[in-house]
Image 1 (cartoon, helix red, strand yellow):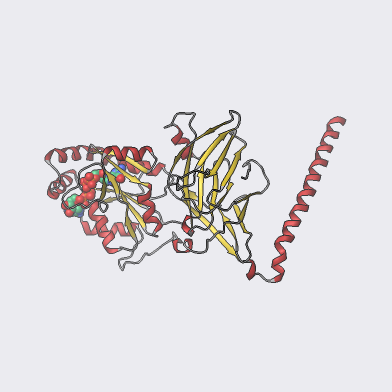
Image 2: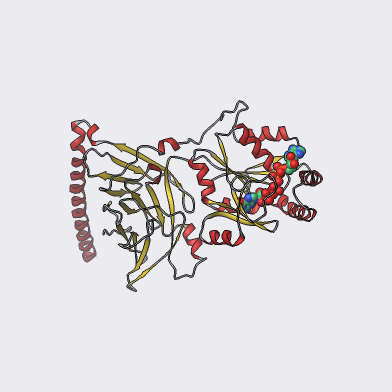
Length: 434
Ligand SMILES: Nc1nc2c(ncn2[C@@H]2O[C@H](COP(=O)(O)OP(=O)(O)O)[C@@H](O)[C@H]2O)c(=O)[nH]1
Ligand SMILES: Nc1ncnc2c1ncn2[C@@H]1O[C@H](COP(=O)(O)OP(=O)(O)O)[C@@H](O)[C@H]1O
């Protein structure tokens, strides 16, 4: 059972306890609460639990926990990063399941708090991912404009570059549509419950049905190192813009309203009533497509081939199939190796760096760099950098260097503390003489 306060200035050390019953307590000096991360003795839940202890009221609170929860491993440690989140490090877990962020006061959590009664504590999990992610692509436009056709061409030509975010919808499947491929076709009650549980990145009521992008739909594609394509309406695009997910936003326009109506009819998938509803909504969507700052690119789908070439240009794809300018480095492969934290380890944080020291001989220490992290709940927290160094690999001189640095910093801190006390005394003397 370990305590720490995020408000202390000095580097923090929180040791992990081995065994699946590991508990780590993080004391929040600001809000009069202690976060206890880990299981109780008779806890049968397979995920890491979170409880909150209100110190002044001397009572336990079970918070609303949003996001995908980490599955228990045989031990974990935790260190507060700032007043907004706590880093949880799972030991003996696979590399893509090692770093987790428990958000306690991020904008997402504050936003979600408004959905709950004010006295209920709200926290959210976000999985940490080593390396940068490729930006998803959001494609919007009125029904029948050709979004699906363009996306199919892209997926066909670049199957290993793009992955489709399979949305959830309450609408009935069309004849050619497969559950889990084109959409997850679900009942309204089930979808509304998942929305309440914070499983959706965005959702909207479109043409009388519910549609939504689950966090997992996007992250599953991104985790494979592929660019995720989202085919969503303008309301959805607006929500994604407001979320922590950074994406490229493209709006597809028809050459004319008449042509849009013609395409919608020739597709032959809707009843006359549905077509009329879609055309009415198309007018509003076309207007909203011009909203300043919402879409990065506007595509006019007149000639399909020309429009497709333009889309490829926007996405920096050459006609030969390779990515021309891949500025977003895909480090997914580097994320999937080099992390294996043993159950006996300790973590200490200084500014944006977290040192993970492994006490067992032969295990290498790791330095986790958090200065360029982005994203966050309800999605992944990406951009973690991890450097590993094995003590055994070090040259003799470098073996004693860390302890030398450690002692030097202790001495320096003691000197500074003394200087501080002297400074206070001097100040007091000056004030007296004033
Ligand atoms: N906000 C949101 N809109 C979606 C989602 N999935 C599909 N849509 C939009 O819902 C609208 C209707 O989709 P659909 O019923 O497949 O008809 P279609 O676009 O005419 O093929 C389209 O504008 C889609 O872009 C989603 O997950 N979220
Ligand atoms: N540039 C185009 N010219 C003519 N027909 C098109 C063009 N793009 C798409 N279509 C056709 O229009 C219909 C609607 O396209 P679809 O991709 O289903 O639209 P959306 O997904 O935006 O609802 C389909 O029958 C498709 O074959």
